[in-house]
Amino acid sequence: MMEKSERYFRILGWFEKNMPVAETELDYNSPFELMVAVVLSAQCTDKRVNMVTPALFERFPNAEAMSKASPEDILPYIASVTFPNNKSKHLSGLAMVLVDKFNSVVPDDPAELQKLPGVGRKSANVIASVIFGKPLIAVDTHVYRVSRRLGLSSGKDVLSVEKDLTNNIPEEKRAIAHHWLILHGRYVCLARKPKCTGCGLSAFCKFYNEKEL
Image (cartoon, rainbow, N blue to C red):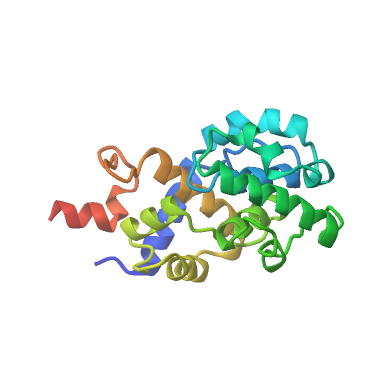
């Protein structure tokens, strides 16, 4: 039975060797654009978000421009993403709060980020990690699934999994580890049909080795 510390060591080592570059697949050119893209990406694919943001940012290039827009103004630009009605309200409110409370500057503190409409704990951690290099782990459905399958966490909820990952991944590796786990879940460790055959992590994977017994 592999000790958890050895499992983390081996899995992180494999990722470092085989995925030395791992970053968000959301397209953005500023902290504001990333924040908007992250809000839009909730329960939606990055690919779909990247399809709608160019026209959205051309029309509303910054917080000031978007703060003057109503949800009805924003909705046509994001109609093809999931939950567009809610997200158009979030973006309108987010931009207004960003202008009024934060002088149009995206805050680097996750607690402050969560004061913005549409920005929950996961989104705040993503923004703080990607833009500001904060040593945070954002647990989305991919990270949750992959972490439990690999045996990095047995947590029954996202906060428990986030705590396990934070406690066991060195601070300097957390930002990239977040992307390692997301990308592995997105392209290899799929929800319904994980590509275990040929996966370089199968030797260390709790799910795979239990399945083989």
